[in-house]
Structures are given as structure tokens and as C-alpha cells.
Image 1 (tube, chains in turn yellow, purple):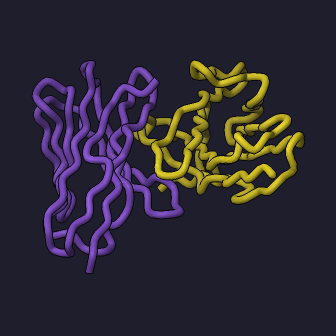
Image 2 (cartoon, one colour):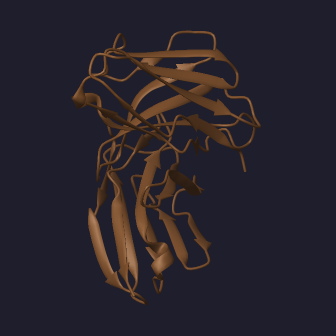
Image 3 (cartoon, chains in turn brown, orange):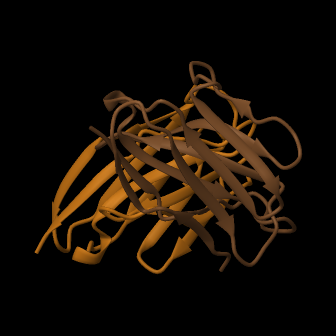
Length: 117
Length: 108
């Protein structure tokens, strides 16, 4: 099946620093990618939809200046958590639907566990 | 925000027992998907249901889509320890929202 690579898998940073998370579709092109946040024992909450070549669409309550999304190519989307604080600690996961017949199926990256000290 | 509710939140079963999780939406869904997330892992696509009243089977897993396309269920027959994980339903349109998930624990 389609492969989505997410990097890094884990990051520990100090409060106030920025963290960039990369999401790559390895064997297919994705004009759209999705970013989710998952708190322990909770569901995945859609944060934003990343659109190649245009601005991301953010869900209500998600600060776009806090969570910067860049979808510079058909295989790469990045999420930057700016000025991270302990409350930003969470599991961030991206997904991408391959184009074509399987376009509705989401293939997920392995996720990034962010810990802000 | 989220459009689908899922119950139960947790389920503990003895190996060999059956398990069912239910997904309910207040609005009609064009289709619904099911995913499984193992502890520490990421969600993995299981199946997509599109038609009203659709029933699909994957070995011991049976997926149903309600006639009104507002609810869905996943039933596992004779659970095994490999079934442990959290099962999510997801509405695909208008946006991709996950249900709250049901965490399944299977005791050997």
C-alpha cells in the first residue's frame, strides 16, 4: 500500500522553541495532506488540511500562527509548532490520500510525539 | 468539529468472546471508514462502506452501514489478543473526522 513517512518520530524541546515536523508521501503524490493531534487515550482531532500550492485550511480553534503549515510540493507537507509550550505536548500525526481510485483512503505517518519541557 | 460519536469508549473481553463497537452520526454520511490503531502506533485503514445497508466481512470482522447511513458498526467474532487496539470510525465528507474510538483489550 501507499507509504507516508513522518519525521521526526519523537522530539523533546524547551519551551519557546519551534519544532518542524515533516510528512512525506513516498510512492504517490498528494495534493492534500491532513494534520491531526491526538492526546493520550483520545481520538484524532483534525487540525488542518494542507493544500499543495495554497494556504492550509485550519479547523476552528486551531491557531494558524501557532501551527504553521507549508505544502511546498506534491510529496511534502510540514507542520511547524512555533514557540512551543508544555500544553503543545501531544502526538501529531499526518495523513495523505493517494490520488486516483483510493483517494478517500487515508494513509498515516507513524506520528511525532512532541514533549515540551 | 467531530461529527461522529462512538460507543463504548472501552471494552475488555476474554479471548474468544465477541466484540462490537458502534458509530453514530447526527447527519447522513456519504460513506464511512474504519481504522485500527495499535498501542503506540498509527491508524491503519480497514474498510470503507458506501452503500446504505452495506455489510462487508474481513475474516472475523463484520462491518455494517445503516440503512439511513447515519450509523455503522464493527463486530469481531471470537476475539484474539492480536485484535487489541483502538478502533475508529471516520466520516469522510465533508471533512475527514474520526469518531472518539473504542479501545479493545483482550485478555488471554
